[in-house]
Every structure is written in structure tokens, then in C-alpha cells.
Image 1 (cartoon, rainbow, N blue to C red):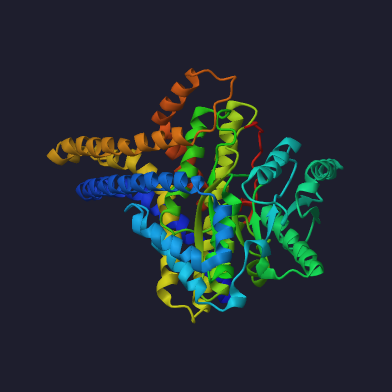
Image 2: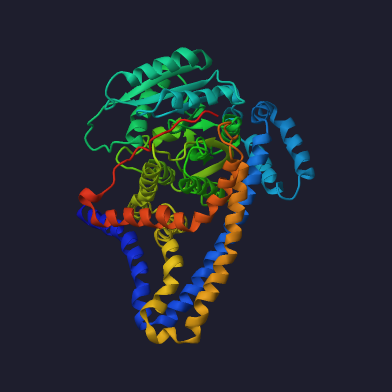
Length: 540
């Protein structure tokens, strides 16, 4: 136990120590090896250029997948599963006439249907067998916010007769406002669902960290009691865990149920929609607007690479899965990604996240003033960067689970470690790394390489603006309808906001990530707790 504690502490320090070593190395090499630093910065800029190009390709691809999937009537597809033989014939004919860009996805879907057909009959399920539970954790949110989330479920293209809405509340929220909010919801929408109830998470449970993970952990246990009383099978229940401001797209529920039904390993999978932080995008300052869209873009890109995809923010899974891992970890900040890793080890490596290109809509950060919004945005990004707390867990559990081959474990470890390091260092290196030998080494300044270094770096990074133009275009495509109070001039601001992207990449990217990693090094009172992002309602 002592050895494990020491190993955990070492692994907590390692990412931040590595990041600081990388950031300080330009100062050292500027004096004792300026040529090597110059060559490294050229190679790094080329790497960044190639990565920006690749990310742009995935972003465009994801955009088209979203457009396609949002046009599909997923409820109709769910009903066709009741006559599987006929549906397989239909999908085979569709494969023959589909275009080359969608052929791979259609082929994969057809294979899933064939695999499902070959299973025993008692394994097959109808959409009418499935109960959909939606958890909307609520802490001091305005009634209008939670109401809009609940209403989006009714507006979705899927019957709500077997939808159960659970509103997890916190005892530490003083007063009766939380109960009054629920009663208003129940009165207005209760008749539209199979059921709607709330849970109250007690305050002061020893060992818990105050936050969403502890709230949903308690709500999950209460849900299990409820399902047991109803006599419902655990694998007949799909649980979507959202934030209080999450509004589902019209086809989200149908797509979720369909993907769940056709997957023969449905209880060993999690289902990850794309969170689009644009509920209130017209309200937010231009600086943080690009940060919100950038977060959405990253999830779009990862959805096109399902072999890399892990849970983030909003996700769904079988109730059986949640029971098997004893629900969310109530002791951490980053409960969504930790849930993915816990299921991975529980099922001996047989776990994947299934991408859903039917998005859910969430709030971008918005305060009561420009500076308050910037502060809140920084806090949110720092909290997300605290996801590196999963690195020690991932390494230690990998050592314990010898039944899982080392390759998939190493892939997860490598991605988390180097992703964390790149998050905190890349923007700062690109902005300042190439200038260090010019500023700190007078002998190097007179060399031909020193003359050409800024020119090459400028030319390489100029090309990366193509990726920013692609992001701007996709950002326009994803904008909700412009509120009437804003004129067309607001669109011009939406275009020019992308000019500040390199700056926001540092202020709301590398710096909060480095802040989080440094706090992890220091430990103790510097460790982060869960910070609740304030919500600001905008009607859509």
C-alpha cells in the first residue's frame, strides 16, 4: 500500500514536471545548443502544420456525418429492427448504392445487424423494451434552464412513454427552491414521461468530493432501488447522464436506442454524443466564443476517430454497466473520463465508446460581465485539464490487470500522457520557442540559420491559418438561429473573432493546463475541487 501511494504521487508529479522541463529547455538550448533548438522548432512547426491539416479533414468529415445523421429518422430505424431479416436486405441494397464517403459506416452497420441476427433470440430486443433514463444534475440552476432541457426530450423524435427523468439535487443547496423547481417541472411535464422523480444527495459524506460525480453516484444508487421495485431488467435501461443545461437534438434519443439495440456488446459500450457548446453562443464575448466552439470541434474530431474516443461531459450507458462499476467515482473531479477507464478495466479491456453524431447542446461559459466571463472560462478549462488525475489511476490499474494485453493499455496511457503534455506546452512553444535563441544568444543571431528561422516559422504557421478558416466555416454552420435582438453586424463579429484564436490557445489552453499540472505537483491545499460552471439562459 505504501509503495502504491508513492507510485501514485510520482505519477501525479510526472506530467507537470515533464511539461515544465519542456518549457524551460528552450532557455537552456538557446545558450548551449541554439542550432539544435532551431532545428527542433522547425520540425515542431511542420508537425503542428500536418496535425492542423489532419484535424481539419476530420472536422469537415464530422460535420458531414452530423448533417447526415440529423436527417435520418432513427425512430423509424428502431422500428425496422423488429423485422430484422427484412431490414438486413434493405441495408444490403443501401450499401450497393451508397456513395464512397458513407460506404464504410454503412458496411459497419450492416455487419452489426448480421452479427445481431446470429445471436440467440432471447438476446434480441425491441425498442419498446428499452427504458431511457435521463439524469439532469441540478445545483442552483435557473428553472428556465432545467425546463428547456426537459422540454427538448419531449420535442425529440422518439416516444417518451418509457422515458424516466431523474433530477439529482444537493442537500447543501439551502432553502426550498430546489424542490419548487422540481414541482413546477413535474406539474408541467410529468404526464409526458413514464416517470419523473428527484434524488437528494446528502452533504458531508466522508471521502466524497463535492461535485457532479458524487451527485450522480448517489442518484444512480437511488435509481437502482427504483428499477428493482419496478422489476425492470438492468440491460433494458439506458442511462444518459447530462448537465442541467443539456438539450438533446431531435434525433439523439432515437440514435442512442438504435445504436444500443444493434450492438451485441451493448452493455460493454458507452455511447458518446457530440456536445455543442452553443445554447447561448450569441450571448458570449467573442474571446470565449472561439474557446467554446473549439471544445465542440475537438469532440467532433474525436468522434471521427472512435479508436481514440473516451467519455466527455455527456454520455450514456446501460444501467447494468453502471451497477457493475458501482456507478460514478464520487471522489474525483473528472468523473466522465474516469468512468470510461473503470469500465475498461471492469470488462478486461473489452470496452469502447460508440460515437453518436446526433449532438446535445450545452451552454458556453457566460458571466455577468466580460471579465467575469474570462475568469469563468479559465476556471472551466483548468477543471477540464485536471483530467490528468486519471493518469496515475490508469497506470496503476494497468499494472494490476495482467489479464489485459499490454498494447491497449499502453495506447491509453500514451494518449493521456502526451495529450496532457501537448495541451500545456504546444501553444507556448509555437509562440515563443523559436525566438529564444535569437534573444538569448548573440553569437547565433549572426548566423544564416538565425536569419531564416523566423521566415520559415512564419511561412509554416501561415499555412495553418487554413485550419482556422475551416474552423470558422464549420462554426458558422453550427450556429443556432440568430436572436432578433442582434443585427447582421453580429455575423461580422462572428467572422473576425477567429483572428484571436492563437491568443486564446495560450490564455485558455496552455496556461490553465499548466496551472492544473503545477497544482498537481504541489498537492495538498493546491489540489482542485469541482468548480460548477455558472449557467446563463438563452431561449432557442
